[in-house]
Image (cartoon, rainbow, N blue to C red; front, side, top):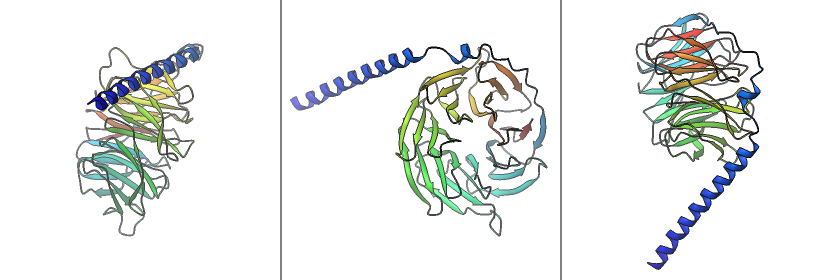
Length: 348
């Protein structure tokens, strides 16, 4: 019994030490924070009111759209709906290139590979299904089904045609070898469902994840470990996105705020919210320059924020239900929003 008490005392003492260290790190970090982004951006010219119009409506899904992802050519995109279809579109002509029937209609994510040869999806089936768009018969059945997660698949992103990263409600992210159909690495440090991942645009070894534990974490694939954790949100993080420079990340949360965190300063730089916005954010995306942050909300609208000044510079209305996903094309020329009203809209 003595031994048991001794261990619990040591645990309590270690906890106290950890809290003290956390406090000292916090103080050291505060001492380095000599200014704020908003103060520094005070003299920057404010952006004019943003006017974006719907240039295309992509009609064809018969139920709620849950995910969309642009191809690198900025012309094609893939969307996933709970009508059980994965549709590959030409956004210029609005033509459907492929309509892929899914084994499970409960899909939550979709991704386009950088080469444009593959698309992937997953959801409540816990499986990441890979489809080859170049196969002779067309993508009628999955080329690979990656199963290993014990919770729903919330997000997937291709590194290349051979590797894909997945995040799951089982609190982990996996890196997969697609050809072999096996998990290469597992990334586990979150204590809530992981909702979103984003690959660094500048460092092929880094990615960010956002989770229902209200934290966003930066991971290094070489060491397979979490190298940075960002706190501050008061509710689930639903969407994370790397800033175009690769030096910061954006987050969107159920606490009705988006935030900008800087990797080098290791802290929150800005928060984007307003007293009259009470709805959670489902998805976010940056413009090509990073000056604009687009955010999709539960209240059927998308808001556009000036990342430097923290001001709202536009509202995109037109959907008749929740905006569930959005993305900016790689060339920065168009924004696509997908909604539970079963429509995708292309804005420019």
